[in-house]
Image 1 (cartoon, one colour):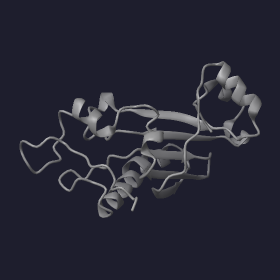
Image 2 (cartoon, one colour):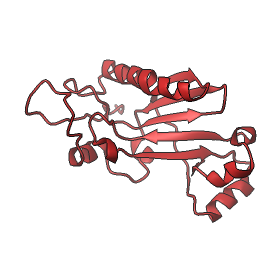
Image 3 (cartoon, rainbow, N blue to C red):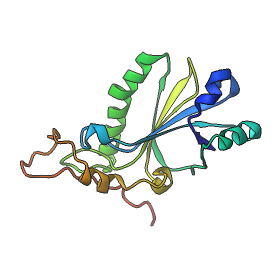
Length: 179
């Protein structure tokens, strides 16, 4: 289960010591969507046996969401503090984007996937896991508008990704894997 990031948990205990991981879900590319309008969700994973903590968080207004397993592109990187976050942004996400391009999950003119990206961090000196969600994407959107429609409403005015002067940024959803 994922519960919205609860600062009240961190006031009294180190979340890593509790077996809790942090989760971020990123929906929009700041290259294609106005950077001030990019969307994300943040949460924590709470082990099933920690029902008391779940009840506390629900009582404070946090929502619980069960995310399904999903076919994903995957990468991992060691977490050693703030530098690791920057390496994730500038190295891991671009590498996942290139992998998606090679798998034909991107528009060839714009090379941007229309899939949510998830980041799961298990604590200091652990690995951070990165996922490009390729199926069950609606569940990961948590009720938010589809990335393609959202991007069309909130384009980045500085976006220059297309070779065509009058082209709008476009994205392509992953191909259906059903047979």
